[in-house]
Image (cartoon, rainbow over all chains, first blue to last red; front, side):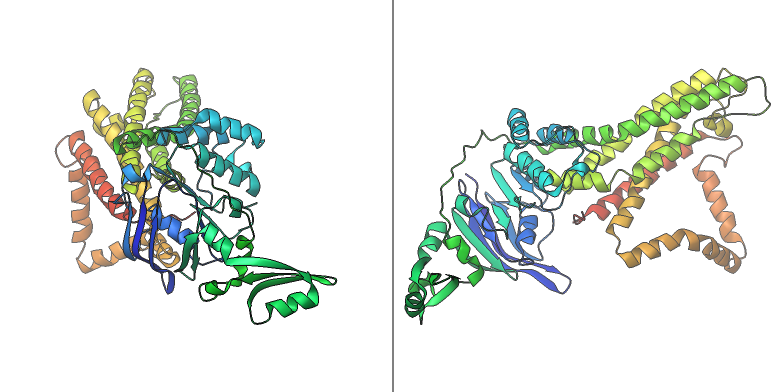
Length: 158
Length: 339
């Protein structure tokens, strides 16, 4: 059972306080919606949960273990980011292949089936995908990753 | 967890809702409770208006004589954060317990190895193209052998090539590592291993190429030009110089990645400023600086003794690489993800 805990988490970017003393506990086997206006701090929260950025204050744990630089924890989380972090020249099916290398629970046949159903051409390069297809591509990686915790940032963009 | 500001599209699959505003957590409740918190009223416009008077109305929509209003239940009035999420309350909510596959945890060591493979695969095309070009040059040397005077050499190109690979080994790979939730420390180890691996592989290929071309009278490898014939030392020297060149490129690209725009300018000016700075210091020390610097370089690369010795150069390359790796570890510390 996965349990995500944030205790007194704040994040400051220069003069901008992106998160202000957030306390939050998320239980396993549930679907949560994280809502807020543009610039409210949603992406910052997810970036902190996956050690993309370091908190100014506070602690973030998953099942009691700190997330920072902790691959045992990080490999159990798949984070579908809003910005595209995939190398531009990588092809969709190559991205599937490498994700399977880093997430041993990755279900290749499921990913291929989803791509077929969404009419996503797996021979295309990631940079050639439209915004909508880029969202689909990243969502497929997340859904097939086999990770017990999925974090989806703006999954329906485009 | 799903983060969005496009509420309509996802509202019916959520179980709990967390709302943040200006960095503050303002609400965390089950969807059912939110659904119960508001109700809609539909009817003749005047009667609806009468009903909603004094109540907390989230939205009103009028169509000719009729009107729909979304009203917040009384016990919720103080808790409701912002009218714009009213839409959530009128969406139906469906529980979606997904079936999770058996959990497999990936060890950090396995991830280091996987990412090393990724990095090497990333270099592969460039390396193949590079050796294709070298093969063409080698064929050219073969063709002019015996027809012209002078010397030809191949191995200097590899060092420059690996330096360029080093310049390109960081940013897109780091972002890709982050896309797969790979820690900075695992990325660091994998990149270091991949550059050492590349140095060993290319060093071996260069040795073979050189050995093949060495038979031609016109050909003299870079190492032989500097140190004379010494096969074992040549292998070590070639590999160490390639590893150093790759690591140097990696360091430069990381310095740029970590720099703000102002620092980028400062860093770019360093090579320009080195020459005048050296001249000034030289003038201040009556030429002793150039003299000792030159003596140090001669010593570090094995030209201090009577005949050139490649082993000090091997040690210098290795010590330089280790120093660069230490600097790179510092540069990667808490490195942000800049897409």
